[in-house]
Image (cartoon, rainbow, N blue to C red; front, side):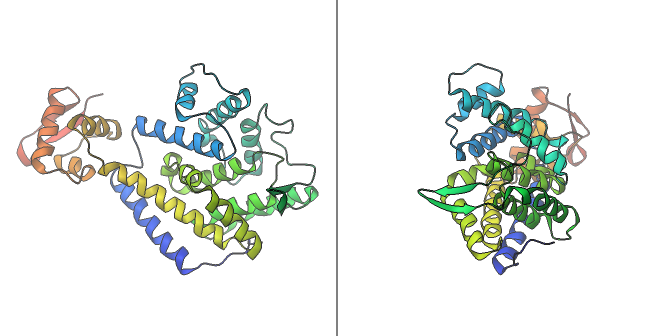
Length: 318
């Protein structure tokens, strides 16, 4: 059974914009970001997703935990971060089409935080907004087959992945399959579904924008609840994804020194390259600047050079 939603002109416009940005990212080698950028984005993802749920640790404290350093902070918050670090470090091991994989991820994410981590809830839950119940989740006995239907949609639907990922996120939040951890699981699983077709999403911290637009996030969930379909939430999430990809591309427009460019390029390039290919990554520099960069790269021992003039080829020195 296909969950209800409509494809609106806004959704079509956003899909076109997102597809163009993914193409630009692939063309600029940004689908393989540098280790430093990967680490920064992973920290932003963990910080934002947990902050939405009330975690108080800062990006600096999360960085320290990733580096196996001790910090002072609430025990629960530290455990949440350590669990998230462990989970995000093994993202590739999870199957976005598998209920079993979904439960295994929840088991890791919520270890030591709830007694029934890795298991669907056995009692009813209501989501509060102030003193009122904003959403009454389906009865606990319906959860297993509702989640089974949702995973069947992800696995068999011919719908494009961008939309399927948003539909899953909303429908999972509606079903509310766990006593706790539903929000972070919804955001995590959307990432996994997107990664399955676009590997770059492993390094796109769209949770960062959700964190900054939390009121809109909850409003989109509520609006979809009231309308009986996920269309408002799809529009919201596609805007978030579009903005996140823009930020990834905007990374290239920041003023970078010769050293910044050389370090970045040496981390993302895995084979021989020409000056033209170097300039395709740094589109705003002149050919003279590119030549100076590459000459300095050779002098610093980052590259080795072969050939002359237009036939010059550079290779990364491992």
